[in-house]
Length: 210
Image (cartoon, rainbow, N blue to C red):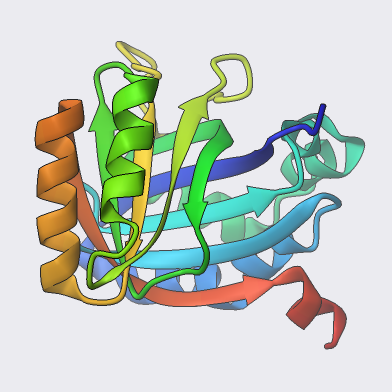
C-alpha cells in the first residue's frame, strides 16, 4: 500500500516591528533549509486574506517518515541564530504534521482556503469534490489529518488545548471563486474557513538545479 504524502503546516503572526526580518529569514534561509531535508518535496508560503494568523507555510513530503528521519532531527539540533531569533518572535503559532489524503484535481492555485473541520464525513467530502470538479476557479483539494505524536508545538505555541482537527485545503485560481467554494464546503462539511494568497514556492527540483 502506498504511504500518503506528509505535510508540515505552520501558521503564525508576527509583530509589525519584526516583519521585515521575519520575511527575510523565511525567504532567504528557512524555506530552503527545510526543502533541502531528505524526503521534502516543496515549501510554499502564503499570506492571509482572511485568517487568524497572517502567515502560512506548507511543506510537502513524500511520506510522514520524513518527519522522523535523522536529517529532519538534525535540522532542529543545528538551528542558526537567525532561526532561533525568529522562532521566538512568532505570535500565536500553530504547527501540525499531517497525512495528506483525498487528493482531488491537480495543481496549486494562487488562492488557498483552509477549512478546519470538526470531523470528517468521507462520503460527503468525496461527493463535494466530485461536484466542484468543473466549477470555475477550482484547481484542487486535499485533506490533512494531523498526527498527534509528530505535531510537537513550536517554541511560542500554547501547549494547552491543542486540537488536532482535520483540515481541507482548497486551491483556487481567483479570490472570489475561492470564497464561494470554501463557504459551500464549510456549510456542507461543517467547518471554519481561512483564506490565504500565494506568496511563493520552492521545489526540490529547483533547489537541485541551483
